[in-house]
Length: 250
Ligand SMILES: CC(=O)[C@@H](O)[C@H](O)COP(=O)(O)O
Ligand SMILES: NCC(=O)COP(=O)(O)O
Image 1 (tube, rainbow, N blue to C red):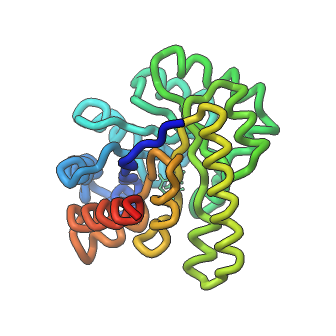
Image 2: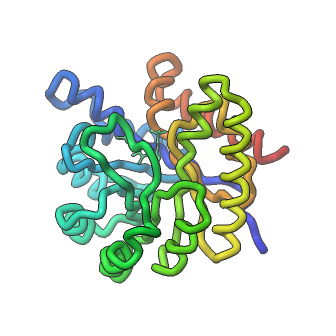
Image 3: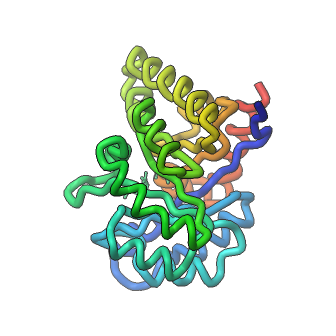
């Protein structure tokens, strides 16, 4: 079994748009953030077009599709509207995420096991159009088995519970969450799925996730955009790259 030596870093730029939308107007421009991320060594850009357009808006996705020189991982809910947008653009990857309008952020993974047939039908045209389909799920064996059955190419494991437990000093819970992520990364990889991870990752909590050999890509956004206030976006991304590489070398 082969594992990727270098883990890809996908930079999620949603919260550049959050900042822009707080005042209205065009600044800060998410496309400029994507260009800086590219120059800083990001391997991909992630953008989530929410149904309520609270951060990214349709014209951001148009601009990214026209100008980006690295792969776009387009996150979206499994709705007809989003499917039509994805089919119009055919981004490198489409990541299906759960969405609740009243949530502040994506609270958990998709319940794919419950909606397996429906999501299987939903992703088929996306795959046939040429996008790699990724499913954002919790570290749960049933969900991963469903992802393999519907022929998703990628799963992205939601790391939010692990990161929150770390940040709040609930170390026993953190270690339980990490053990689940570790076991389920191995399990997903054994089924032939490419395994990604993300949500809530910071310099402090990323090392054990970066060190998981089966995890080929991390998607990181909110923390990096926050750190950019202090370090600049380029500096924040380069530091994350260094922390990830150091953890993987160990
Ligand atoms: C699905 C996911 O984890 C990301 O899209 C990210 O968290 C940023 O978007 P939200 O904060 O709106 O969930
Ligand atoms: N899919 C997770 C992602 O893109 C980034 O999540 P976050 O770092 O903004 O929490």
